[in-house]
Length: 324
Image (tube, rainbow, N blue to C red):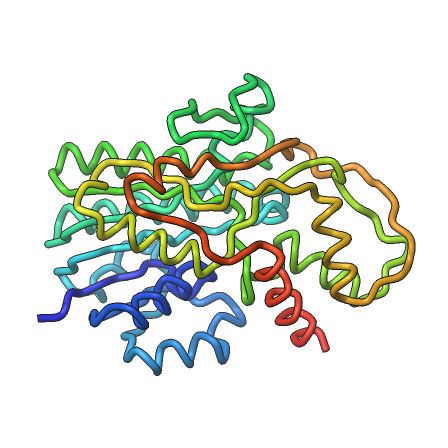
């Protein structure tokens, strides 16, 4: 009998990446449940859904009644559903907290009342925004660092607060109600169809609109970008590993680059020949971020395969086609 897989939030960027990987590499019965934000039922989504006969359940899962539309038994549940984006946090911090908290609470209630084999909760490097910045923990950063944010009232950190809540909630519910849980902390995952509220799509849009001089916000800040196919494969490895129960894994790439380098390579790919000038970055944005993925390599045999420049070329091409 085929294993049954549910991806809550499966219409999103990472969720669809996971669905595509499972469809290509596993003979599973896949269900995607999502509210479907505008534009998510695009040609990419429709193609994946058709190719792998994915069952679609559409609705707002902040409403607990929506969970009655799901089956009562799944072998694997990927809990990816949440709202994300720095702009969303700044503009509607109260909604980020309401939506993400409701999704966590409703999912856990449904899990403990049904026959669920294993659960994976998606978290983020945002959970230690102050760990490296304020308390000088090492970069590359391992999973065992304390989770900390800076100013509790700052709207920038509302997403991180909900992810910290989710990690604690899923791990403790898993222990108390005896179901296996794995946590994955994503680290700057990128690729085609990643949305429009992230740094790379924003850069493409600005270059496309002929901004000149081109402002580089936070030029000396560093990040480590991981291509979507690597993140999707690593997530499935974390879920399906028999020894990953109640463990936390970084999902990312260890290659750290500056924002200035990223911006100028995007500019080269888009044929920009104008001037660059430095500009300040978002308040609360950390100066360095790079994961230590030793644990994921040793436990899961996880190893990113796509060089960031190669992934960037694919991503820029996709967004340039979109804008044109």
